[in-house]
Image 1: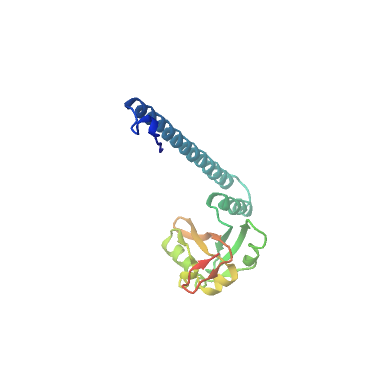
Image 2 (image 1 turned 120 degrees about the horizontal axis):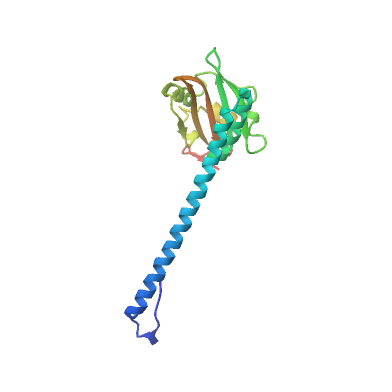
Length: 192
């Protein structure tokens, strides 16, 4: 908080005025802090609600396709991604797209009929081998993890792969992406 005093006040505030201004500044700071805490509580409540919906969806006795569809729909709400695909691994070792949810028309189309061989997407292979989520914020700068063919077909700029594990065995993966259809600059960085 900034204040100024005119020449008529002698240019120097009294101790009383300084104390009042200090009190006002303290109240303003407390109000701003309370506002931030309220916003954080609202966001935490929203995320808790979404996670509860995911947990309820998974715990219900319903067909697996219904559960996977609900999870694919909720992932963009929680993470802010444009699209989320659920891949399941078959006995042949390949990943097959089970369901896709996209926030904009046309984004899910690239996944139709896709079969991902283990060598097609090193990011997927690495995440499954390590058994942990991996993210690439700028796929254009990581062609060793996200090949150009993948970039061309799917137009993803940011990609996350979360392996689905049952007793340490990979049964599939959740693949949320930001799909702004970026172009790659001369430096290899994605630009919107």
